[in-house]
Length: 209
Image (cartoon, rainbow, N blue to C red; front, side, top):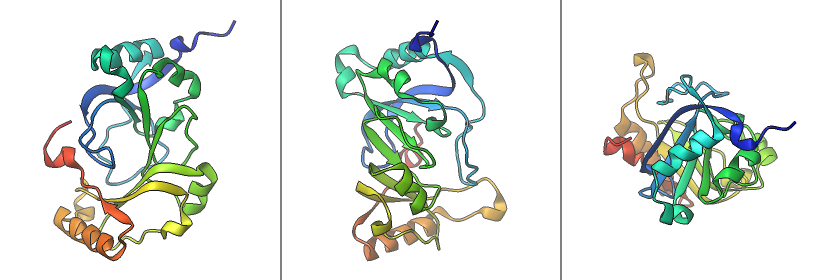
């Protein structure tokens, strides 16, 4: 007998309410579900995605609703993040969150479920993989350090927004780069490539979760 989707178990790092700190939705109220595990190992990653609690979909839904007002469900952003959420998230799961505006933050290595309404892709793969996985996304948000080269927009799937986000400090001293240097480089890039926009990590600047 097939199990009810609400009984599906997921590995969850945390569920919390905050504002979206980066990208085109910056400043908007949102509930975040951070799923564990990732298929990449980025040196500048600031997320402890390898520690998790096992929760059922129904438990996750209850925790999400505790962090949002019922009358505001249709207007609430529900952001699935990680780690890499496409390793666990499916349309079957998303059926239980249809009263939210479902967003995903993905590294672009896998296609996203069709029930996702807003795709924020921070690519960790080349344009050829992105074209295979997506015909269109809402935003590309590239982390950028001083000296990084980005693909031309013509190489990428269609998007509403093309953003660069300066990398904040990594923990390893050998990879230390001043935030100011990365910001200056990003600003120069945007000034020379005006289809791109600058996206600072507001939550880090304001020291909020």
